[in-house]
Image (cartoon, rainbow, N blue to C red; front, side, top):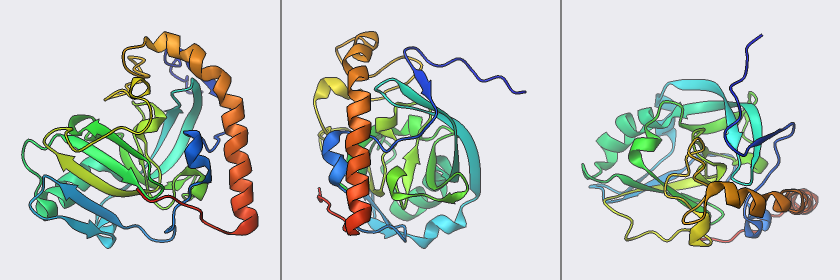
Length: 236
């Protein structure tokens, strides 16, 4: 039997894998779920949109823990997709031509979500552009048709419904979503970088009471979506 690594500081394992996030996104859904289209922009020579290009990359599968900043962890999630490092080296560099010092990466989603990470973090070999979960196409609940998976970082860095990636020299063109103290530039799990200016261990106690009501809110919104078949969404 393979022994699991200890949980990171402040995390607690759960059995299910809920749809989760900031509450405004409970009622926001992607408008395109059956095909992958990703715009590339920022400090690049050629802004463009890619789709079938991703099929050229080697596909991989991995099992990795998913750590939510609110302190829950889903162990050994089974993802399928392509490595971000392959995507960057084989598609972004030759086709878009990012500036050599464009090391600040912004990731945007169909539902208006956005996040950022240093390029160096995204080039880790366990960071994926994922389109499958548990051997099946990625469901809406978890980011269809494409999402980022960055296991070393809290879940708010693994943006769902990914449709635009920007490579910038600095963060002048980026505004984080939500309160700044809740958003860390790197959000590394092993460093407990849950946010800025407030110790990570203290944020545990702020976030934990929010887990159950947030799960219920997202579950209710998803059920309404299934019942109506609509895709209410906010662009941005």
